[in-house]
Structure formats: structure tokens, C-alpha cells
Image (tube, rainbow, N blue to C red; front, top):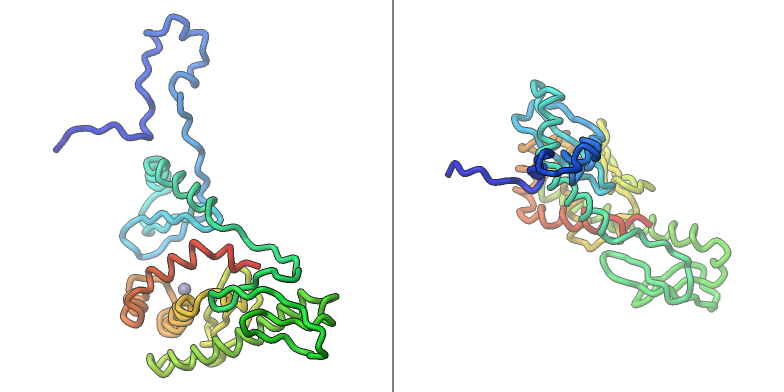
Length: 258
Ligand SMILES: [Zn+2]
């Protein structure tokens, strides 16, 4: 107890007078042998919270959540103190799976509710996409295939998400005014001030337990519009393992961002 431990981020102890050629080296280089990377704060969110929280976003940027009374200087100091941790998190985020770029070739894999479906072109006169063990797509769709597959995803996402939403509405008593399927790339779900819920069609690529988490998250927003501790308490009451699902979404979200 009470012993001072040198942190990894502490500048190394250098005594310029020990080095005979020190005056030839610019001073800055002696003091900062391991220069601290400058960490840019993307945004500071002030609220009635009591502690400062540092959040590394999936885009490898930093969001600071702070109480109203905390000064900019205090925030800067904390960010500096935690810079080793922040840089480590930035590296982790950058190593996560990258977004899939489809080229819509025969055999290429498409995700639906967490499963892989290889694309297979059919020339049997059918006029719609069909999913069994593969994703059967009429050859006639080929010139505009991106549009057709996207439209299929939107339709399927609408059916699945609406039915899951109805199920959780019955369980929770929280019922949305409307459920819409959006084209959002980053926001898997959102809640309007008029009580409508929006879900990105891209979400339907994720496993069902992840889809369910986003639905429950948005349903709770109907009663609790913020991300306060009370909000998370309500989510946990409905879905005790929500943290695991939330992590999955964070780590794999680039996979969904087709
Ligand atoms: Zn939310």
C-alpha cells in the first residue's frame, strides 16, 4: 500500500546531464522518448451523471460522457492518464471484422439471421428470391441484382422484425405506434419521439438473439428515451444477458454493414 508504481504511460526518467551529447539533442526528444499519441475527443456528452466515462466507438474515436460540473481541463487530464488504455482499445476496434463487399457472384455467401446462404442463380422461370439452404436468385435479376437482393432483405427483415416486435410487445406491454424498416448503415434501431420504431434491414443478417436485443432495446426506449442506468436496468430486467448480445453487435457490426 502506498507504493508508487510507474505506469506504462509515464515518461521514462531521463537525466539530460548524464548524457554528454544531450545538448545536441532537441530537448523535446529527451523528455518524450515515447511520445504520447494525441487522442482526439470526438465529442463530450454532458449529463447529470456523477462519473466520467470514456467510450471508444466502433470507428475508433473517443466519446467522453461527463457530469456538467467537470471542466475541460479535468477531462483532458483523465484522457491523458488513460491514454495507454484508449490506444489499446483503438487497436482492438481496428482489428475487428471488416465490412463485406459483395460482388454478387455464384456461391458468394449472404447472411440471414446469423446463417450463411450461398448465392445460387436459377433459370427456371421463377420471379422471386427464395431461401432454403441457399439463396436462389432468378438469373433474370442479374443486371440489377444488388437492388433485388436488397429489396428481398427489406421484405424479410420487415416480416421477422415485426413478428419479434409483436412478441416482445406482448411480453412487456410496450407497444410501438409503428415499426418501419430503414436503410440505416450504423443505427440498427431507433425510436422516434412519437413512439415509432425503426430498424435497419441490415440487422436481419445477425443471429436472432442479437435482433431480439435491438428490439428490446428500442421497446424500452418507448418508456425511457435515454441511456441512463435506469434504462439499462429495465433492459436487464427483460433480457438478463443483454450485455453479451450488445458486445456481439459491437464486435461484428462491420459484418452487417453491407
Ligand atoms: Zn438506445
